[in-house]
Length: 254
Image 1 (cartoon, rainbow, N blue to C red):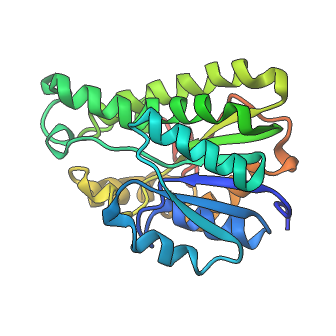
Image 2: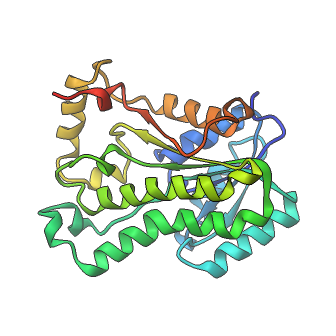
Image 3: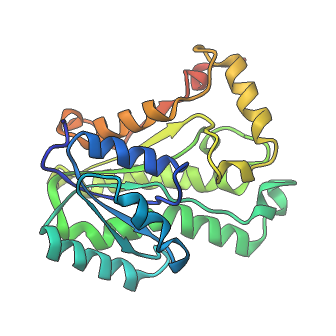
């Protein structure tokens, strides 16, 4: 129960297969009170129904591309809880056509959308939520190794993840005076609905499985467990870092 008494916001729960949902269930099991957001009316039945499976959770609609909706969310959380102890950001998107062919062919709109949805949404959420974050709060986002190495087909999302990791470092510096920690988790390929939009995703999983030191896929539960650790007081000395959870694949040269 390392999160007993803590209040956490989870951004990006979309369906029962999403990484954010596994993280939500694990944080719930460790005693956290949770708020889950959904982007649009299309999710209005799915996510609230999922939240009913948790011990102490409610849902809020918030489109992270809208500053007004983020401000409204922050106000709601302040009225309900007073303060928020952790925020988990598991939000990313790129146009399907940008995840095939060459990165060089990325469109201006495709680049803007990927950066706004996958990167600035984290910055904007932290910016608008800062007044309600408790001292010593923890912010976590989800990255991927495509931020620093070429993953064919990952294209503009790799560039977005690089910007996301840089944002983690700058935000860690800005918020450090209050003891607020900002970190990223970088899992290996996980078979979510969103990941299936990446070209040759199954081949990517097989390649990593064959070469990773553990000779297996990334386990979703170990990602959720590590996230719960990072938002707990046990990780109070960790900030500005990217934590790899990819069965060790990131250490390999060949």
